[in-house]
Length: 253
Image (tube, rainbow, N blue to C red; front, side, top):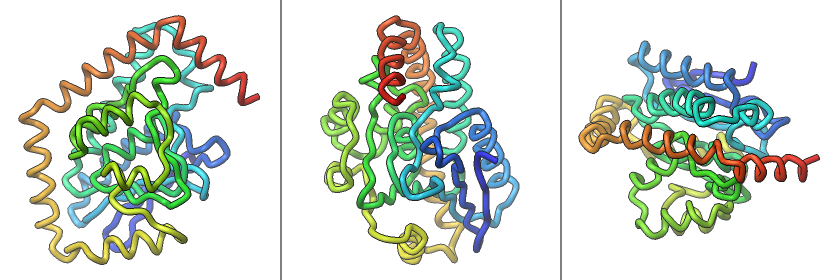
């Protein structure tokens, strides 16, 4: 199984379970996100959703290039990008708060997934960044669009995207991307964070989340994400992107 979903004290924990390949996303993991959304929507007792990665090295390295690099044209890439983006939008707009428990490196699409969450708890040793630019493409699952919604200064958000490099946890905290930085066991860090929240009053948590969702609906967040997907698919088709990916893969061998 490429993922696990566990419920504990009305908190749903989704763990990407592909540590051998840095918890990269494939269609099996995407099916897991689909299941996550279904379980939250069908269980009104759920108060929080936590997304994390297996192991202690990687939160998520983004798309599995062994799968997605087979896509060559704009049409092929758009089909994949739009499918993932639509499912992740459902995660972002769940009626309960979401926490990215970042246990290790989060780059590319992994950084996009962390960004769409309401809170980001980052392990001190972790690095996170939108590295897509080095592959001659933009974020393609909505990550850039979500980033500009997260209350960061515009210039810092744009800098993070255009530098296309992983940031240290201290930098992530300084820019406002990280909610908190933790040391040691991620479970203890999570428990400490949620202990400060008004979990007994889940109706209040959901009411505040609805305020955010209404703002996103009014500003046509979904439509803007799909424009991002379209732009990414056009860049995906270019030879310079495929050359950059081939170069990256050859260095890993």
